[in-house]
Length: 408
Image 1 (cartoon, rainbow, N blue to C red):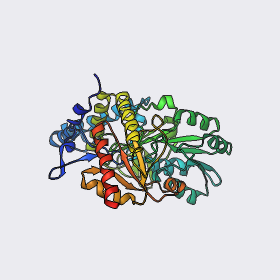
Image 2: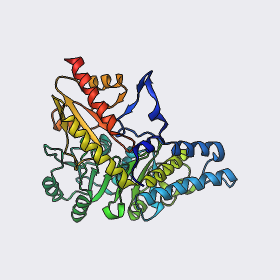
Image 3: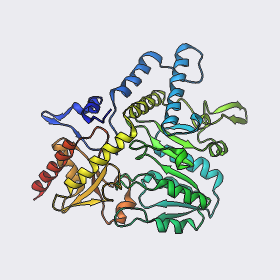
Image 4: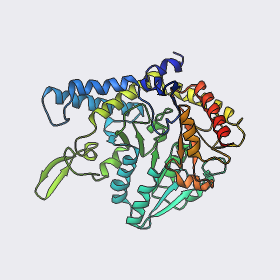
């Protein structure tokens, strides 16, 4: 079926609300978090109403139903990213926790003083700070791939830095500020040739276009449920099985053990040895429902819709005098547009736009080094998803003209 954005919007209750009487919501902050379709809300509500119980421990009907739904969601998530086995899907709270899990469990076990980690200047803080902490603790060296003026990674510099034999390469699949989609498959292959393990931050890619971990040959992939029509409080770490099996547990407690004795314990098998304590059961079920929803619409269709929207948004925004866009041109980026306006702070832009019901983000977007690279403290950012329309982009542009009028 052809992609019908108006039909899609009917699945998202919040998109029909008014933020104030007579002021309709124009939600352009999906990079921060996506809205949730009724299919996800209903799946979580049904679990709490009918099957709420703890998992993996009980043998009564509700416990078995809860466990089955929790594990079925894991299997659907594995299929969504083409993981060879559901056992390679580790539930976490979010992308941040997934990256920290790798830093603490894999990094502490396998990195030694003097080892190098290669990152980039466009990373979210979640893919910087865990490595800063580990480097301080273990005496590691951090290198960074610079950015070009048009918002791409300098791939020649990347190849040069790989010659220094980093043990780990970690980079974002798609920038949450610039929208730049990095050539992950090529970069991963080059890193492997240099002998490095690769962690890919998929927080902005998995929700927006097809991601196949086997085609990418990536070692670790991290992503969040709340950015892909799922609930908050649930994320995923995918890992190659031999790496997950070699890693020690991340947290200690219930369900991550096979046996506990006074003075010793035996860890559980993958993935359960990384899932200590009662997990976010309803949230995992909600993420499974979100995956079903996205698959029903089609990730290729979603990606095509966002490409068309992004091209239109860039065309309209370039008309605005004094507005400066960051990042690559249309066709080289996802549905994110970050910009500045001469003489007007991004927070003021966002506040005035909110008066007209237009929700955008302002600040450094947890990417301060990127903003420092371009010599600016902050940007305003509009971001799109499967439910965004051209008319909403027109309202954004109209709102920006109102900002300019207010500030003279």
